[in-house]
Amino acid sequence: MKIKKVHIDNFRHINDLDIVFGEYLSVISGLNGTGKSTILGLVGHLFSFRQGLQKKYNYKTFSNKPFETEYSEIFRFCGEHDLNKIYNYTGFLENDDGKEIIKKAKSRYVKAENRFRIDRK
Image (tube, rainbow, N blue to C red; front, side):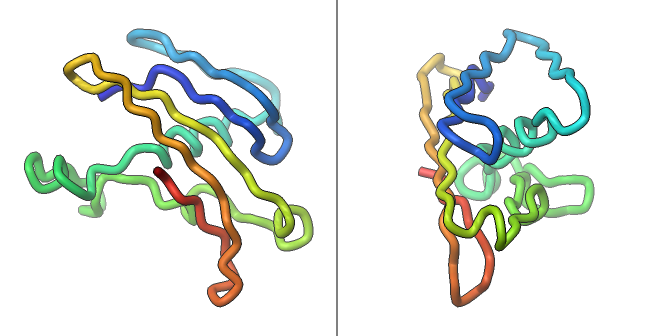
């Protein structure tokens, strides 16, 4: 599976942005605070091998965890700046058969846990 494009509707200071990835290599560069790590975090969050492929191929990280990115490992949300906002982005992936897979993600605040979650669909 490979990533083709990410469309960020809105995520913090990034609005209505398409990022198209190269066939074999993509380079992300820029000054501090421009969103490079945000882009990588959003892309990482789109992937999960917890179901299906995880069992079939036994994908694991170096620390023996399921191969997926936990949102809380990437972003620290601020109650002052992020609490009343909803963030949306979409990943466009291609499976090994060339079929396009679209994964949408949307943030939500879980008051009982006092934390933000991003739901992937």
